[in-house]
Length: 120
Image (tube, rainbow, N blue to C red; front, side):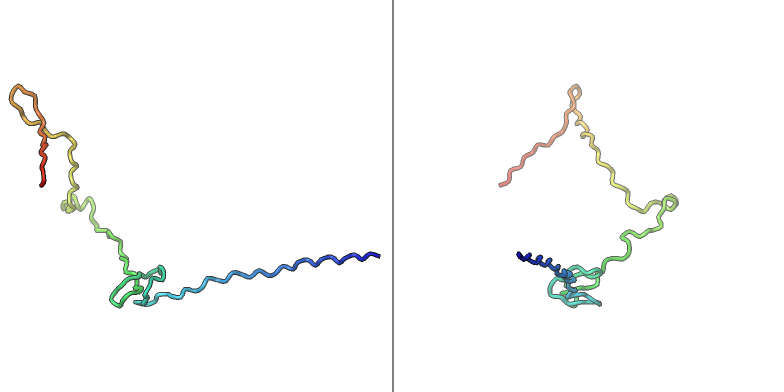
C-alpha cells in the first residue's frame, strides 16, 4: 500500500513587535536659565540666546501687552479738544507742472532741465 504523506504544518505567525516609543528628549530647559552649548530644538516659552549667564535657554521675554493698547481717544474727544494725531500726508499731485509764461503772442513752453554732468 502506498503511504500518503502527512500535510505540511501551517506556518505559525510570529507576534509583531510594537515600534519603540520615541526617546525622551535629552534636554528640557527649566527655570530662569538652562545652559546649552548647542541649539537643542524649540521649547515653548524659551529662547535660545547668549545672555547674562552665557549661551543657553532663557525664558522668552516676548511682550505680553498688545502693541497698541486702547487710548480712550474717540471722535467726541477730538471734536472737543482737537485731534492730537499727526495729519495724514497730502497726496502728491499727478498734474503736470504749470507752463512757463512766454512772450505775448507765442505759445507757452514747458520747462525741462536736461543738464548732463561729466565726472572725471
